[in-house]
Amino acid sequence: MTTKLYWEDSHLTRFTARVTDSWLQDGHQIIALDQSAFYPTGGGQPCDTGSIKTSEKEGRVIDVEITDDERILHRLDTDIPLAVGDEVSCEIDWNRRREMMQQHTGQHILSQAFFQLFGAETKGFRITDRSTEIDLTLEAQPDEVEQAIARAEELANSVVFDNREIRVHNVTPEESAKLPLRKESFIADCIRVIEISDYDWSPCGGTHAKRTGEVGLIAVRGWERAKKMTRAHFVCGSRLLDDYHAANKTAEAIARKFSAGRDEAEAAVSRSLDENKRLSRRVRELAELATKAEARQLIESVGVSNGRRVISRVFDDRDFEELKLLAHRLVDGDGVIALLAVKESGMARLVFASSSDVSADMNAAMKIACEKLGGRGGGKSDFAQGGGAEVAELNAALEASRAVIEKS
Ligand SMILES: [Zn+2]
Image (cartoon, rainbow, N blue to C red; front, top):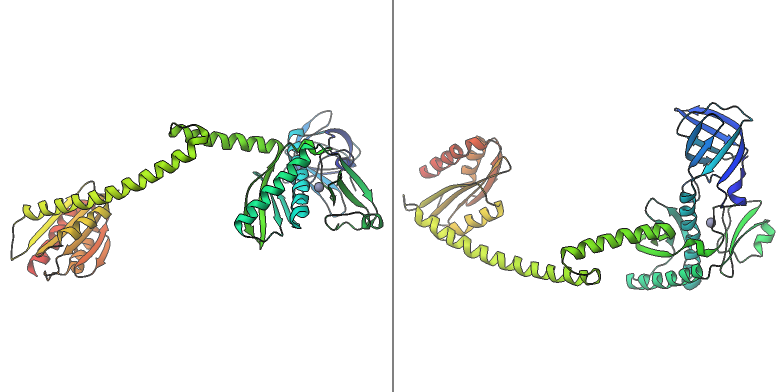
């Protein structure tokens, strides 16, 4: 069993210890110590990192875990020759510890705020790379959840600003039964209880700030429904400052694109989106007019043969949807067959259409063209589409279709 120095002093960063066991595993040295300030992964919180060194060599601690018999195992990024009884010097990464302690202590404060204000219990807790999640028994409409979050956040931050003392009590189960605990403890014999002065009592084996002011600030970034509960995502302390800088940078960058100040950016974006919708509508109207005019010109440019006009064209730069629109406009009137193609990203794409008074099978003609193009296609007798990769065969494919149509 390893003595948990992080329980005695959560701000201890340097310590010496004796090796109680050591072995190599997949090229990594695993070290068990008689005492350790390294917090092992558990209770929703990632482990500490840091270094362990002997007089000869130093290794980075990249993972820490605790075994069922309460031994703390430190995984190094390298191998260090060690013998049982050797003394090692250890140091934990304080910035990471402080960051984790801020999120973890912030969770105690925020969870109690939800409990005190709405009776919502915290059923799950995880510190992830970006934020911290708590699963709350809070069932309400979205706008009510938003209001509840705002009130809990306000209460939680007032507790932070009060800079209240945080005390650790090691009590027996009998003593704990008399305490106003927020949640049940799962530890059988001795219970470690964290008290936030005049606010919260919770059994916990984690690392905590000494005063609430260390948490810095608590902000809920967002929430979602998960497992029939409300999952709130929040950030505290140094993470919150990083998050603010990232959010501010994004907001400033968007504002600059609209030559607006940060606070005016949302209105500028809304105006731009409205304008975009209006222009899109206008473009569609104009495209319809332009397509009608183009169809008229194309019809006039070909002669009548057997009482009908066959319009066969290859376009180099045309959106396929626009091409289909042109085909429809060409066959709006009587006696027209349209065989249209476009070259698009190394592919030939085709659309064939015929006026309602023309008896020619566009589906059959399309299959003939697609065969030559090494592709596939089909449709109805008056409208078909398809394509293929043999772009060099495009003119020959259209000619083959045209020849079949002219015989019909
Ligand atoms: Zn805790």
